[in-house]
Amino acid sequence: MLRQGLSPSDADAPIAGAVDELLMAEIERGQRDGDLDATVPAQWIERIVWSIVYTGLHAVGDGLVARHGVDDLIRRTLRGAISAR
Image (cartoon, rainbow, N blue to C red; front, top):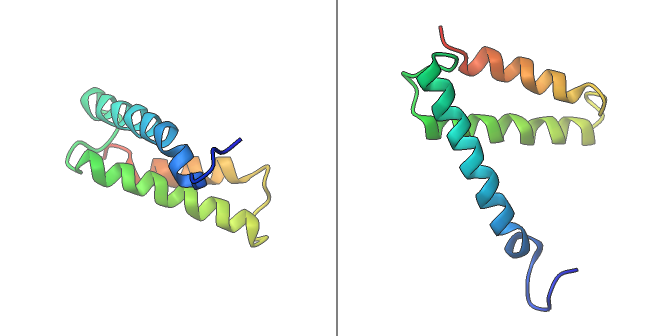
């Protein structure tokens, strides 16, 4: 339950920050290991990840893709966008 005066974004900020830290750590690990394109800034990849997730959520809401299939579509799109060449 939200405390009075807090918006959902304020309440979610600590969780969002923790998720961002985990995501950046995974991106940096992937770049070190050669799985992700190391010539692209890690923060750029982070923004691409969030953009594709956001697009997937909206696509489900708009009826463009089925909820049970959007996760695979997100993964395939990300692999194509940020995999090491």
